[in-house]
Length: 140
Image (tube, rainbow, N blue to C red; front, top):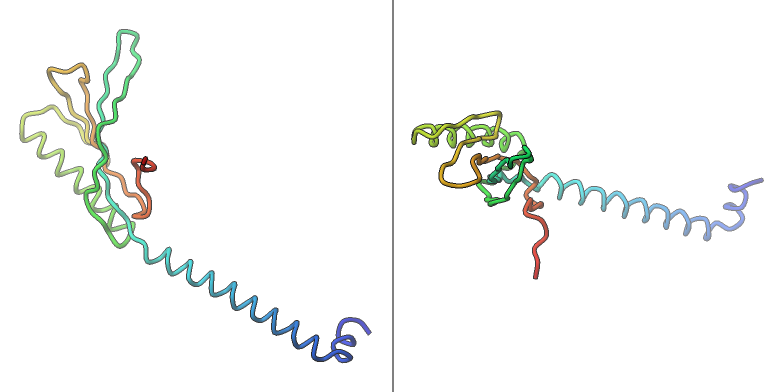
């Protein structure tokens, strides 16, 4: 007889089991829908990451983190990516206009500094989900 025969004999138990299964399925689908909506609702943040580099006598590179600064927020990743490139170009143009030796590779601007052991400095423009902070966890 199997499962269906048992359902006919104990109809109220079978209906209760089916109701629980339906309620569980609805709850799971609701959670998925809310999570999808939340993920779609989150935007993107454009960050400017500044750091300096110097090379010692052994040709070992030493990097010093300087700052992470949020530049703008965007609704979509593609908007952020477009802004990332234009911000890097603007930074390049500003530094070049000051007579500073500068290079541009994608969204990374490199330039030379004087009067410091950190001869090279960089500003890299990066898109991050607006729920993430590239500076890491905040301490108390």
